Image (cartoon, rainbow, N blue to C red):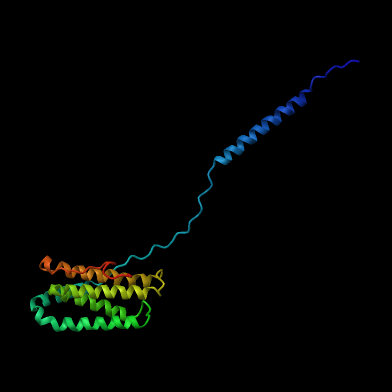
Length: 198
């Protein structure tokens, strides 16, 4: 019995080498493809919100003139006017407490206007800063309660809140800046400690 082992044919050897080269090449190709990062997801471009602008240069100039006039006239002369504007603001705040209004309500515009006019008068009579601070604090609390029912993502709502909350604070700060001495500064401040629940 002749058991001779025949040598593999060159075709089979070549096929085996080709398969090995093909397998190695495929693995390298897969590794390279896995190294390529995925494209970043396309994020839709949000439209930039329109920045808030007061655009009330004439109003500010008028308030400055009102302050100068009140300062010249003296506190005794403007006391009646201050009491009247304070009464109007208190009436508006009572009305706000009785019902829920939309942010576009003209009542908020009147409230804002009266606060700024009263701030100009209080700046001329700093001894009224404590009362004005309490009034501004009540106003801010009433507006915050009203805003609980509003869509705060709506641009008109955001603008109304900015005008009333930030605007009332600015009005108070401007009145405080005009105070002749530090002794005239209010003893109360806009804080959560002073009005719990805000």
